[in-house]
Amino acid sequence: MSMEKKVVLITGCSSGIGLSLAVRLASDTSKTFKVYATMRNLAKKERLLESVKGLHRDTLEILQMDVTDRQSILNARDKVVEKRVDILVCNAGVGMMGPLEVQSLDSMRHILEVNLFGTIQTIQVFLSEMKAQGHGRILVTGSTGGLHGLPFNEVYCASKFAIEGACESLAVLLQHFNIQVSLIECGPVNSDFLTNLQKAELGDASLQQVDDQTLSLYEKYLQHCSMVFQNAAQDTEDIVKVFLDAIHSANPAFRYFTNSVMPPLTKLKVTESDGVKYIKAMSKIIFADEDQ
Image 1 (cartoon, one colour):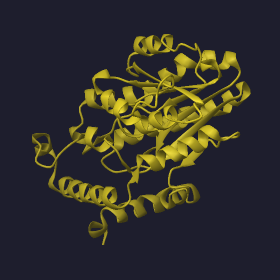
Image 2: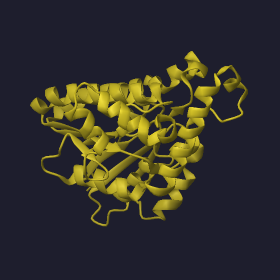
Image 3: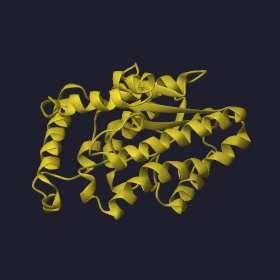
Image 4: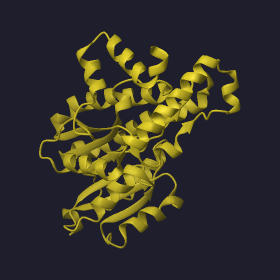
């Protein structure tokens, strides 16, 4: 019976991690999960439907949900047939890259609306019922950009740092309601995230107001990013395995690193609390020639 299934609602399922996780859970041969895969634009649902290849009878529903629109979240909640969510996965997110001087207030607001307020108001909508039922899991797609700063990603990192604080604060409280909160800390991932990110391209008219040294450093940063994504990016399937570990664990951790260990730079930031060594190390990695 469907009532015996664990009800999972996932945001940001049109591509990437959300899509892969929805497919994996909905295609589970034991039919343990009933998955509500949500996305802002339902026109993008075909990719998800193609991926499950008919294995999703009675285990998958696709709902429209815009995490920046509270009414949209409430509408999606009301379409959950079981009237409960056991596992909430807050995965919707967007990125923004470029010199801070060229970022408009509207574009900065959008990043915070999706990454921070979108996550928080999604949790808000489902939290009362999770508390009332006396159990639940909340998984949030985090980022190493929420643990240490990245040049030319100031606003993105600010949004992800804020999520760390929100989730950590909730985790302390929600253990008293038998609700576990977990952050899945991702590094570079082979997904549409890079394609969809708001990014200042070299040659853009907006960059004409930026000084030459900043442009030179930005060019170096873009080269560094390209190299990292070619050589070190993880596939979404690798990330999904970490989500599954958290979902299946009887006692889930608060923080999971998708490459299984805390990145050395994050460790450096924790162990050298004045922050100077981290800043120098990150600068050296990205702008090696400049720092000689």
